[in-house]
Length: 420
Image 1: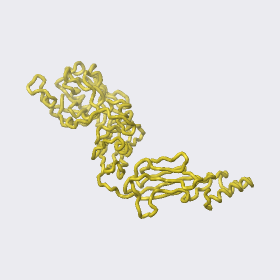
Image 2 (image 1 turned 180 degrees about the vertical axis):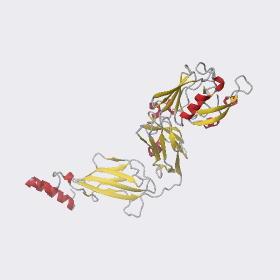
Image 3 (image 1 turned 90 degrees about the vertical axis):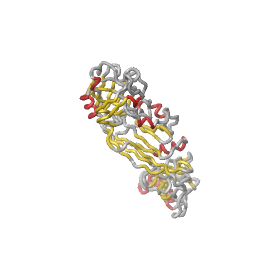
Image 4 (image 1 turned 180 degrees about the horizontal axis):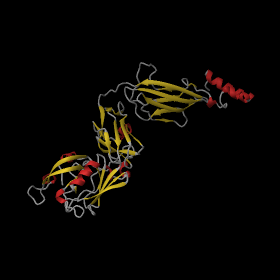
């Protein structure tokens, strides 16, 4: 039994309360030892951190706390560094040992708060601060978040580009746990590993309209492997605008535009003709270009052939890197609303294209339905992230398990010019 003065005082109060009854109030609260002020539990527990305050702890070793008093136990432990990063840990069933389960950061200051309980139920407390040493390796894994700060539509994924490849699943889990995304209002979501150097984050559903999204990394100084530690990352803040979704129906040759669930415009369109069918699926607006010169040679059409073209195109809203746009097509006005005659883009009158150009922003959504074309690529040709079910998306997480469903992005696709 703990024999500190504080413990004897609490025990004495209990005996007095049992004898006199009315003395309960004098002991404080209702007489339960848990109502007493916590005593200093320094003699009850031990840490595996250096005793010398000038000596720094090894960040590669887990933090361990042990109950030294056989009659006492640890009831709770919280540990965090100066930046607010919490250390995950596990407490044994008998309360005799707690150990960290997430890596400590190098060159960081930690504060540990330990709560204990003696055999009489009296609460103890100990607060410890310690510093970790500098990492032995200088190699750092830097993270670059995207897109740039600004206002986006509800379909905009978050990207995380890593400065070095991470292929091992356990190492990926360390990285993924340190990449934080917070949304107000809240939107549950998850990371998906596109390849060894790129992750995407999206909510289960689209972002809430008018949400604020903050992205940060807690990876700095954290050990990922024997030769790699987390590096720096600049945090990111995004504002989400209205929920704008345009649905282009290739069979009815109509595009319907919705804002926050309400139809705001119906536009006659033409989509890809046989052999050049428009991709089905959900696409995210990548950008807007007032003028684009589009050539058939950019999509493999031989110059001088019957399908060859070289046209100035205005009010072009890009939805794939390979050259699929929603744009003005004054040469096909006679077919808009009745036939599909384009080489893969969604064409409309100049007036309608200008309205669409002025209405949408990056991150808004264009969904093509009832086309004979393939489904939009998930990665590598823009953002086809929403074409994976939530179940398949979760399989791309190193924490939840599974293997990413999509291949490594084809970076060359970003360089391909446009189709009309």
